[in-house]
Amino acid sequence: MRKILLAILSQLLLQMGFSQTKPAYVIFDAKGKKVSYEKMMNSIRKADMLLFGELHNNPICHWLQLEVTKELGQTRQLILGAEMFEADNQAPLNQYLAGEIDAKGLDSLARLWNNYKTDYAPLVNFAKQNKIPFIATNIPRKYANLVYREGLEALDALSSQEKAWIAPLPIEYDGELPGYKNIKAMAQGHGGDNLPKSQAIKDATMGYFMMKNYQSGKLFIHYNGTYHSENYEGILWYLKRKNNSLNYITISTVSQENLDKLLIENKGKADFIICVDQDMTTTY
Image 1 (cartoon, one colour):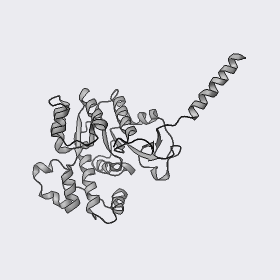
Image 2: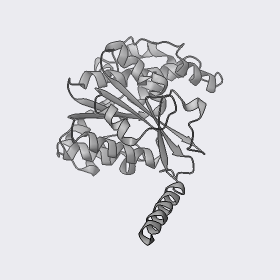
Image 3: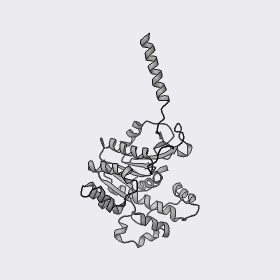
């Protein structure tokens, strides 16, 4: 009897412990159903390309990016790429990956984000240690700014070298896509049509360099701001225009006060939605 009572007590204490846990994040599928980390990983393992949408200053997101990448690297050959590196910085990035320059040299030669050391260096160093290609996919910022000021047509006057760092011109552009319409609406008229076009040239360029460097049988993991791929638009729209037969998986990251249920406005943003407690400390 004593053993039975101890067993019951242990079970009750275990249940109480689980009920009192406060998770830092919860994973949902597109329909808003809670799913396990392992179920998400099982889907990603079958993919050709993964678009991992992040909140740039969210530590949980950056930690999961590294953990997901390390785990996938155990069973898949990887190619990595990121919005945070602009295409004209590919040469110094390659030098760092090859061990020809150190971290200080990379910082001197490439335009690194302010949160590079804490949030992206672990991914780059993982690629370096495991001899994995890491692709600088984004358009150089000054050319995106040029589009914002003067429109897509202004890119035509660039040199052939400068155009090599951008998706082939002219790019397709659909201003009726909800994501681009929302950008324009949120700006309340500032920037006009050129504002969403400056977003589109980033999406098109990232998609272009992803597709250019993709190798059949490998898994390309791309790290980008969640808005660049959520609702199956942005980068993914351009990827599918080039090759609709690949298996694409998207992840979006959102922040909520309550993690028990995914808010309606966050449903459908991606194949998997990482919902993080909004009180989570930010990296900057």
